[in-house]
Image (tube, rainbow, N blue to C red; front, top):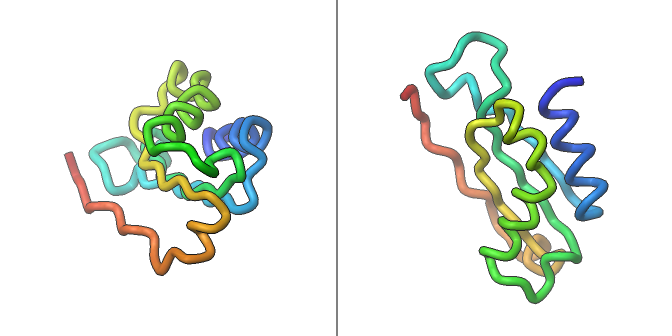
Length: 99
């Protein structure tokens, strides 16, 4: 199973997202071709309602502990409650990094 698919499965099981995007951004970094080490996650979940950013990120990190233990190097997280997602105009772009 790909790392992206594993991320999807773990986040779905842990946080029941109403919206989930998992974007492999490894190609923006100095890694071998076809790597799966750097990801951007855009996730909307009722679990995030009333939670501060730190609690949201901790929940995502806990859900993906296996992936981090097995080589996931970097994760950009954009976590939203359903109301925040409905009001969100655009998710920030990731910086172009080749380091």
